[in-house]
Image (cartoon, one colour):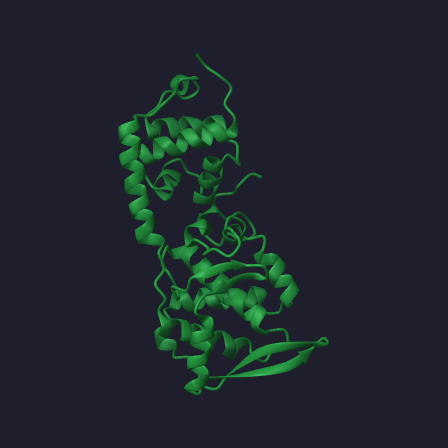
Length: 267
């Protein structure tokens, strides 16, 4: 018996079948010629699937369209459980960040070299430049830049252990903390006293940081905070909890930075 499926039901069934086959979102998306964020939105039930896409999915996932839309459709429970366990293990391996303190210090120094002279770049803007550098790099390369963990706080994502690193850097004469008046408010700023060791940054890492600086470093604290609050990793996280890097793959425009070739998404 066939039934009219909601977008959410279609997404759930595609997710179950993909996991049963042991495919990543990236693998399946490439096979059906759509972007990973598009597949993520389909699986979440936030995007419709056209007939051509559904046909491609049926070929890759091995289901008939009649079975897929039937009321009693199900995948093998045993296979599904095994696939979910495998997917969970893979996700944990990929997404658990490990802070690389020296890399973090050099990324911070590099950003300060480029931006410390700008009157708007106080703590709030600095935190967001670090966040977008880290999450943009992860979305592009599926590797961690600094490995810093970020927590969802009211003013936006904030890197954990930052205070301890800042204290270390001030103690070793790498940076100086100053307080200034900015639009009648006290602003905390950091001044670099040494240059970043650029041998610590790969070309791909520097390129991502440069793009973030170019795009966002002239924004006010309020503007960049509001912007960060619309980014999917922040939106999908609970207040006070750590933000999962994997959520970067659920980004949509204008936040997504991944290049999917000549594909044009229809909105």
